[in-house]
Image (tube, rainbow, N blue to C red; front, side):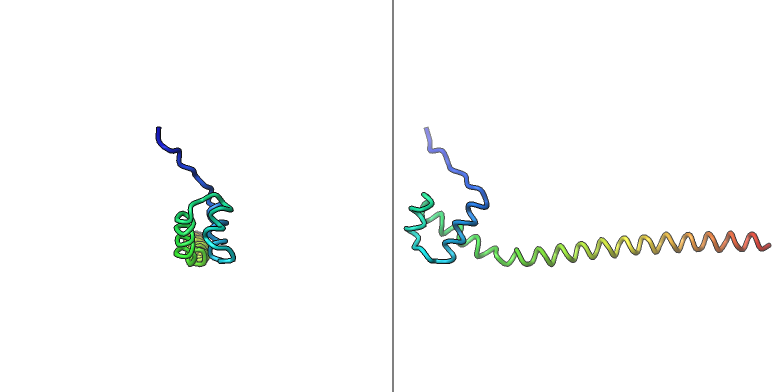
Length: 97
């Protein structure tokens, strides 16, 4: 029978990685504190530091997407109003005959 792999929540991984990034404790101390191998801690630390910039990019991307949705909706409203204007213009012309 093989070993059962432990799975950790993302928040737990983040907490361990953050403590590793702070470097207030050695890897051995963190390893014994969290009962995780030092190799695993190093992996999580590397993953966290490599992907840290994504946190700030997501906000910009999300803001751009929101602005695009607003702009699309406004153009849609403009199109509808133009159509209504043209229809009313034709109706007015037909009534003045």
